[in-house]
Image 1 (cartoon, rainbow, N blue to C red):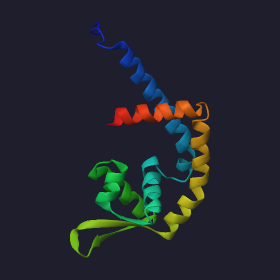
Image 2 (image 1 turned 90 degrees about the horizontal axis):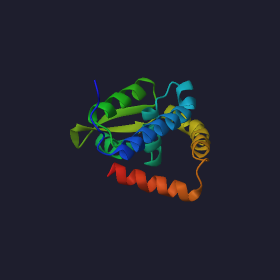
Image 3 (image 1 turned 90 degrees about the vertical axis):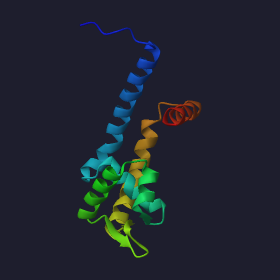
Length: 144
C-alpha cells in the first residue's frame, strides 16, 4: 500500500522532530521523579499547589495544569493515597472540591525541586538564550 502525498512535508518533519525532542526531554526530567514513585503529572500537581500557597480548588488546579477532569481526579487520587495531598469538599459548595498539599507532599517537593531545576537547565543547555526564547515562542503559537 502506498501512502498519499504529504500536503506539507516540512510540517511533518517538524512534528517528528518536536515529538522526538519532547520524548527525550521528558525522559531525562522524569528520571529522578520515577525513583520517588512520582509521575510527571503528579510532580506538576505538587508544584502548582506549592506555588499557589499549598491549596487550590480542583477546578482551578485543572485549569492551571490544562488537563481533563478525569486525569486531574486520577492524579490527585494517587497523590492522596500516598499522603501527598488531601482532598475535601468546600463548605460553601458541596459539589466542589479543594486540594491541599500535606506536610509529606511539601517535604517531597522541597527535596525534589532543586534537582528538577538542575535537570531542566541541563536539558536545555544545548540551546543559547535566543534559541530558548524562539522555542518558547514557537511552542506558545502551537499551543494556542
